[in-house]
Length: 307
Image 1 (cartoon, rainbow, N blue to C red):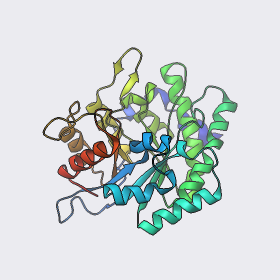
Image 2: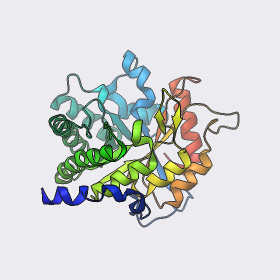
Image 3: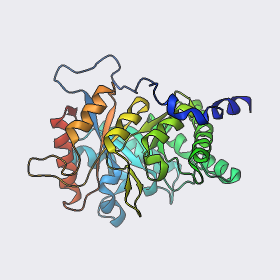
Image 4: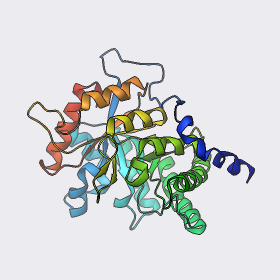
C-alpha cells in the first residue's frame, strides 16, 4: 500500500513531470544506424489483415507464415481478438511452431476486450488486471517482449490519470515477474492526449511500462471530431516508447501517406533514440489489404526500415 500511495502521490504534478524523458526502448541499443543505412526493423501488425482473418479467407494460425511468405516481413505483432474464443495451450503451441519454423520473430500481443485497466470500480479494475495475465503468459511463451494494452477509464481528467496508473502499475508488476513489458497505445479518449498518457507513464514509474505511439490514432473523441496533434503527441510519447505503430489509410501518387507527414513523424521517432520495431498497420479502405501492407512496407523502407 505504501508503494502504491507513493506513485499515486504525484498525480497533480503531471505537467511538470512530463518534461523529463526516460530513454526509449532500443532493439539495437548500441547502434544509432546500421551499416546499410537502416535504423529500425519492420514488423507486421495482425490487424492489417483483419478482414481476411475475420472472413476465414486466411488462417489466423498461419499468421507468421503469411507475414514472411506473402509480405517478406520477418517479425509479427499478434492481436488477441482473433484467439479469444477457443484459446488453449494447443493453439499457443501451434503459433510457436509456425513462427519458429519460419524463423519469424514474435514481437508483441495487442490486447483488447479484457476490461478497463482504469475502471473507477475497484473490483472491475482488479478483474481487468487479472484478465490480461493469460496474455502475459502467452507473450512469454511466444518469445514476445510485450503486450499492448489500453488505458481506458472514466471521470475527470485527474481522476482518470490516477485510476489508469493504478491498474497499469498492478499489471506491470505482474508482467515484470514474467519478463514482459506492458505498453499502452494512444487508443481513444484521454489516452489519445499525448500529455495525459505521458503523465500516466510518469505516475506508473516502472521500467517495464511504456507506450506504443500510433501515428493514426490521436482521435480523442470521434463523435465530436476532437483530435490531438499527432506530431506533438508522438513527440510526447516517444520517450516512453517500447513499440511504434505505423498506421496508414491512404497513399498519394508518390507513395507517401496522403494525410500524414510520414517523414516528419519518422524523424521524431528517430530523434528520440528509438531503435526498436515499427509495425505496419494498414487500416485503409482505398486499397485491398495486401496492397496496403506492401505500400506501407515500401514507405517504411524508404524512410530507413529493414524488413
